[in-house]
Length: 226
Image (cartoon, rainbow, N blue to C red):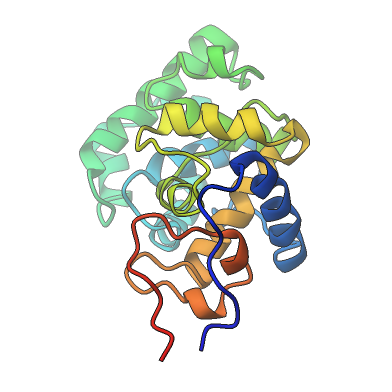
């Protein structure tokens, strides 16, 4: 028997969102970014590399990358084949190497090697979209510029009935509208941890989930009660 029944999908999503925030904060009080980094530049590099790749795999290559290219100017002056060789084990390594080098060059040329503190300016850098900018600004600087929408956040937000969209931009807008801005950064970190530990994509542990009573389980088959 499940320890609780799923939430009624007709219940106001905004009201459930507030309860979800409290539950996640209780379950994952110390959740933080899983990408290993020391400062904004390293996190920016790691986040660009994390596209369509696990954080664990990224963390396995960044030490060597950061050792060889510790500053934006070093990466800006790098050779394409050298960067590719270091990150070869990651998916789309050629495109990612191009993005990293392009990002570093523009960062040096236009921003004097210092990361700007707005989403608008950060997204001028090659390989940097809203998600990446939000990750860096929120994690390193504590700036609530938006909600990070990765694969976990996109999937679980739909299951929770907090959005009906599959578009990351719209999902971010939906979440920003119902969550207090003080929770934008932590909400993403905690939901990502929840997706790795409990709400696993192909085998969600619904009956063991603290959010079950708040989750209408949109798109999933009914729970077995036998």
